[in-house]
Image (cartoon, rainbow, N blue to C red; front, top):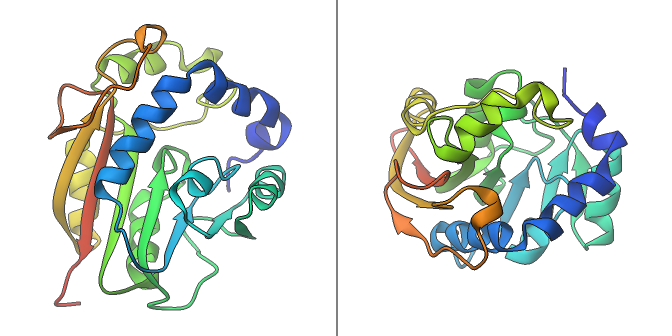
Length: 213
């Protein structure tokens, strides 16, 4: 069952977070852009209010929250109802798919990646952005999880766990980058992307649909 209630009821608080953490948002955008294909037809899975898709030039997305979809539509996104485990798209429809902090809210992460695999074309790419549970921010989120409207029901992952899920779903890891190297209140400028993981709290992985499938 999709965890939509916090997003349906608290969209203003959700949007306000990005205003209050403006440089965190810009740093995350830069990290995603580092790995996002420059060409091709893309989709954001768990598009939310469209705050990432609109900035990244992604025209399509799906989300289970009607409130979030309405906001994404305002931002010019073709936002459809859909959960990550059962996407509303045909096989081999997209050149790339993006998931930003979506994986921590799905019921079945492996099935979500299998669905992403299904809708991607040959050699299509999946870009996954998330807060690493072993990072400074990840540990803080876990510590205060029950105090958060949004993260109360979330499940956090380490980068290694995401690697494992992607490999099980027939993706080949291509590149990993990271950003957000300080506690969120201390991020007062864009923190530029670095390769790898273990230092930054926000990790982005690019994986390619396995050619043998």
